Picture 1 (tube, helix red, strand yellow):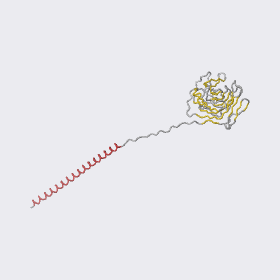
Picture 2 (cartoon, rainbow, N blue to C red):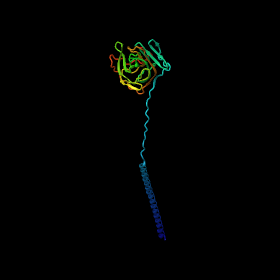
Picture 3 (cartoon, rainbow, N blue to C red):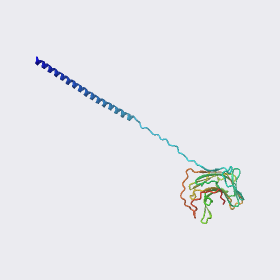
Picture 4 (tube, helix red, strand yellow):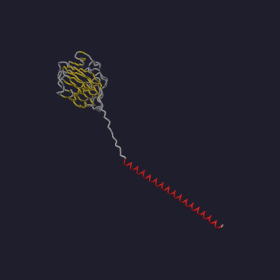
Length: 298
């Protein structure tokens, strides 16, 4: 009986161990399968994510950039001087002496001279005018064919060095350059002449004179019609402006002009003034004095 019992106990122990081994194998198998399933699921999710991202990138379109141009800015002229002669608020030099008369009458500035003389009336301004457009309205009430009315521009303080623009009684327009020679004697060189200008109205009628100085160029128009266009001279770059009337040597009567308005405007984008290269001998002063005088008699 003892031997038989011993065998039975050994068999039970063996069965227990076998059961333990089988159970351990089952547990290991389940763990391995779970890991395999986890790896497969991760790989699957990764593949799905990659595919989705790729599809989204393909569907994205490139944006179009729209550029709107800024509007260009155009410079406008600035008024430097204006007078309609309603009164003498600008303080023109008003004097009445024999053969030289300057006075205000009926909202006009009147200049009258006789005995073969010149009467000038400087614009009452401390500005040294360089690049500008000047418009003046005037009526020549008495004049012979050789008498003239006009302007000095870019002049020095004594009007010894300047450009002179003449409108003669015979409808001729000239531009001259004035200077002093080596003996301090006044000289004049005619730079341009235009005869029989039909745009000039007859004596007693209102005329509009437009003069533009832009860098080294000078232009003149009468009643809106160009007369002398872009005359080139670089000797004088700035200076005073003066009105004038000239009684010629052959004139038996006084010359009289009545100015109704005067406007001077800046040029927003002027041409550069080149280095002066005087063409006259001896050369004029290189730089005129910028200080204007109220009145200059010649």
